[in-house]
Length: 308
Image (cartoon, rainbow, N blue to C red; front, side, top):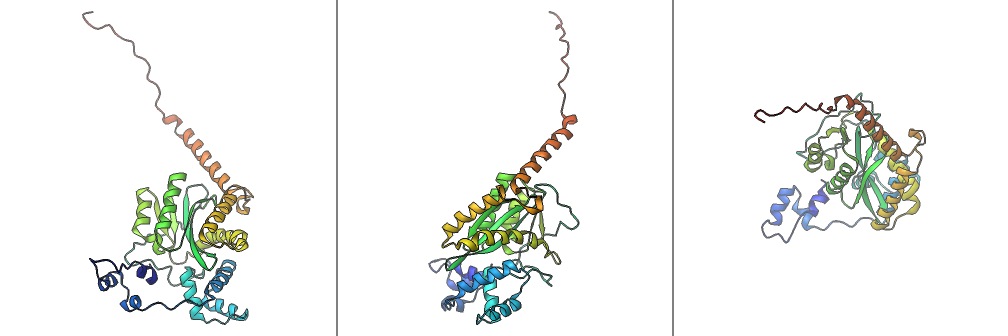
């Protein structure tokens, strides 16, 4: 959890815990609590939208090249500001790095389970990721859970904070509506390494996989979904607020799942592919288990009791 998020958890009205003690427990500096934060630049929202557009088009861009392109476009900005906004948006360039996304301290990191695995059936592997959605003069975060084989979006949630609750809510819905996958793969973000999220997966009997060093290419898969969503919906409509964004994104995801042909699926629709795969798997399972079904016992000849 970032420092601003931890700072927001402070309760000045708490009589049991002083502000000093709360700061110590949350590992935040008291100076940052008592001193008001500097207001953001007036054009931060516009700049963040432009950074998001550039990142969606070229997800390999880091802050250095992002700054150079912005300056070439006539935007007077330095690299530190671009880095700050990218951190706020929760984005980082895709590419080989010496370290992956840092989890929160104390969170368990699970091994990567997909090396050499061929993913060809529905509910074999699910994945989740978070992206930034610009709205009006602010922004929201969107999490989506997808089935890798069918590309179907199984559940999604919008939130104005990067906490675990909206990710957990999407997971609970996906498990309730679509069964459970064999493997669930994420990056090492603090939302996905939290005890609440991994505990829900473990309780459902799902194997947990997390991207490690050299697995940055796995993110490219879901980045295609984000690119389609933003260029086909978010950037075109320019949502004014969260309610409008939630309604519009819901309509686009329904269109994506049920009506939009997907090139990787031979122009079939993601949810249709998921349903067909699940139906075929059930049919095969019934045939495989047919010989194992118990047969009706032959009726035994009733004998007359002694002494009758």
